[in-house]
Length: 184
Image 1: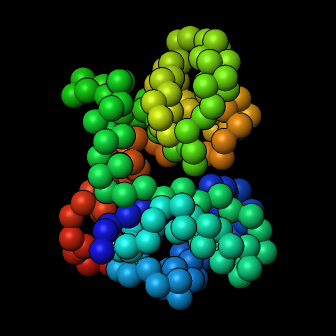
Image 2: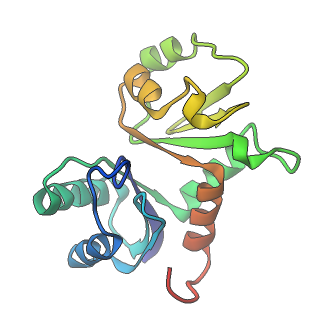
C-alpha cells in the first residue's frame, strides 16, 4: 500500500460547495481508502491505497458528484511524486520567502502547443515555470493579486488544476511521508 494525497479543487471556498471533512473522510473509506486524514478545510486528503492515481481521481470525482451533487476536480499524487515536485521547484531554496511560492497541480501534462502558448505570457515581476504536471509560481506580492492564478493556467493549458501555497505543499509532504501521530 502506498501513501498518497488527493487535492480537491474549489470546495469550502467562500461558503460554496461545502463538504465537511468528516463526511469526505467517510466517503473515502467507503471507496476502500485506508488511513484517511484531512488537512485544513480546502480539500487536502492523505491516505493509503494501491490503486493507480487516475483510477482514484475518477472514483473520488464520481463519488463526490453522487453524494454532494457537484463536480469537484480531484488530483492524486504519490509521496514520491510530491517529493519530486518539491525537489524540482526552481524558486525554492533556503533563502526564499516561502510565502511567495505556490504550486499549481495539473491533472495531466499539457499539450506541446498549449504549453508553448502559455510560456509566451510574462507577468513580471511574478514568475512561473511549468514542468510536467507542475506549475511552480513565485509571486512578489499576494497570490490573489497575481495574474498567475489557477484559472489562468486551466484556461491556457486546457487542463484541470488546483493550486496550493508552498507551506501547504510542505505540510502535505510531511503527512504523506511520515507515520501519522495523532489526529489530523
